[in-house]
Length: 184
Image (cartoon, rainbow, N blue to C red; front, side, top):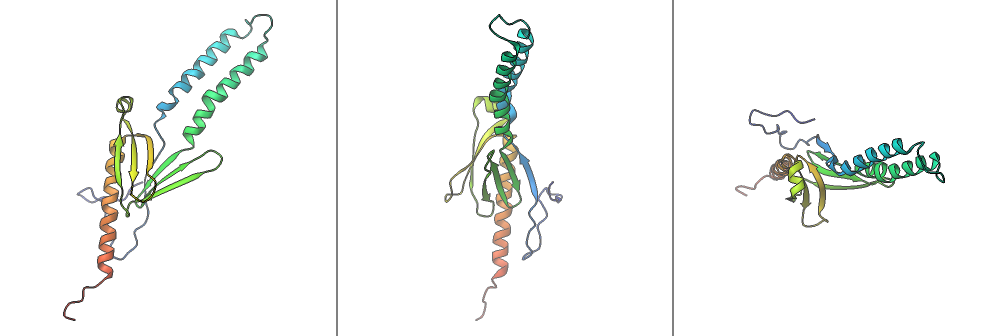
């Protein structure tokens, strides 16, 4: 969901003094490449279980094999997936919101109007996958770190545009609210 754009590509701005509506720009999770090893473990466990089922040595039974396979899948496949799935980043026209946590949910926000610096760090593997780590710092709060952001250059450009638009709107509204005193 985005705002309608003008011919120049910029979102349409409301008239001065009118509150701007908060619109969703993007919602994403970290890149799923972190689940590569989990997928490999899942394939290996299923292959080993299928091969060994019914062919175990004498002291071992099939239920032991299935229990061990279930425990491995739970610890090395399901838990990493749930951790990955529990962290989302939402970018709106007013702020960046990060939700994380499995049992207890944590929420951190950073406002575009307040302004912040954007730093992007990309390692070799991140460049191969088109991802990167974005750190947002406003100088007051703790830095907001967004690891493994997919399409990191697009997200970086979007955040920079939102900072610019939000600060222009804030400055314009501040200027229209105070009338200059000429001739007094």
